[in-house]
Amino acid sequence: MRKLLFFLVMFQLSFLSHGQGKIIQGNVTDSQTGTPLPGVSIFVKENKAIGVATDFDGNFKLSGVNANSVLVFSILGYKTVEITVGKNTSLNVKLSEDVGELEEVVLIGYQKVHKKEVTGAISSVKAEAIEGIPVLNVSGLIATQVPGMQSPNLTGAPGGRGAIIIRGNTAVGANIDPDIAYSSPLYVIDGVQTSLEDLAGYGVSNQDFLASLNPNDIESIDVLRDASAAAIYGSRGANGVIIIQTKRGAALARPEFSFSSNIGFQPKPDLAPMYVGAAERNAKWDMLNNWWAEFERQNGTTPIMLSDSLNPAFNNNVDYQDLFYRSGIMQKYNVSMRGGTEETNYRIGLGYDDIEGVVKATGVERITLSSNLNFKVGEKFSNQLITRFTHSDQRTGQGNPYQGSFNLNSTLPINPAQLNSSLFYISDEKEHLWQVS
Image 1 (cartoon, one colour):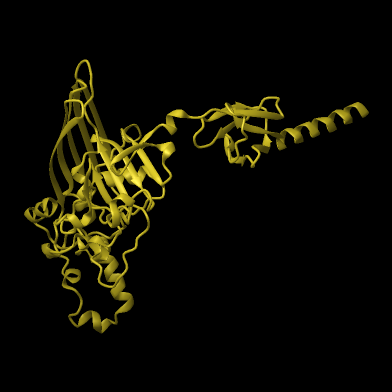
Image 2 (cartoon, one colour):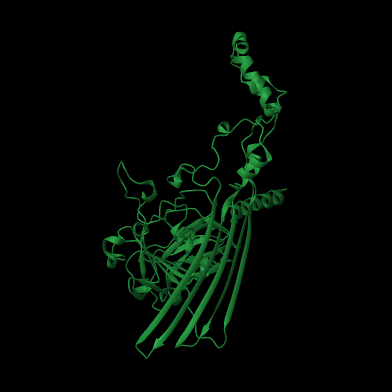
């Protein structure tokens, strides 16, 4: 009996010890110099909530792990290491430098520098990170790849205008134009500086001015955040600078072809519940019976569309939401060719985008053509010829009914109560006109 009790007590203690996990400690150093590495992030791969960072001497102590736990050691500039705990209670980890990351080239002003030599706040996005992301405009692409950046949408229409804010919005005043109310950065596309103030058509159309640039043609995006990084651009770079470099040709033995396609669907949004036809008439009659006196219902103030149910003009069941909304479809196709030699190379890209909005008669169709020709003249001079062509057809439903800023464009009323009654008759011609206008 005593042996049985002893066995049960030991089993409970071992089970409790296993449930709580064990403590593991150790040290993290540089693999080449042996220097302790402070600030190394250490966490359990299966549960990132269990983690710690090394102290100033590179030491760490982590509890709540078990033998099957995998510890991840990571810090900027070094290769990430994963180690299974197993039976170890102490670990001495050595990290090696990630030379590829430190040698990565970024653009600053008119020169290229290595990332390890940069002291300013810079975020870089390469072509490998943005390939396959199905977005129409570049502003939406930048917002998904650069942390800490604000990208408010000025319209819900496909391909509509957006804004990018890098260093916070500083536009303050009582009479600010809503179209340029954001502190937009300076854009430098293949060395050409462009800001929103330089574009005469910005604010009077529903197009994003970066919509003419195909994301598939982009080689790299460098975002200069602080004043030291953007100092070369003077006051124009006060709100930050976004440097975009497009893809170029390469010295290849034979021409290289590339093709990509994306097809996506956007379901019809959840519509507000509404009474249609006889249900609308009955619901409104119930309201009149509850809130109106009998003499008020009989003195001619009752709407005729409720009382004259036999009139064909007031005996319909038009569902306006179903009439205007649909499921959206997005199609993207890109094809490119590049080749050449070290002295002369080229790249040609063709893109086609077709997006149908969830509101009928809304969407955008865009065709982009870009060519990049590079050739050297002697050993010291090189020339680059860049040509871009963009044709865009944006469908905005009712268009611009208020004849002003597209911020006021409401294709459909937001409040369903503002829609016409479903009892009104709509001719087939008018229904077709509404769906294609």
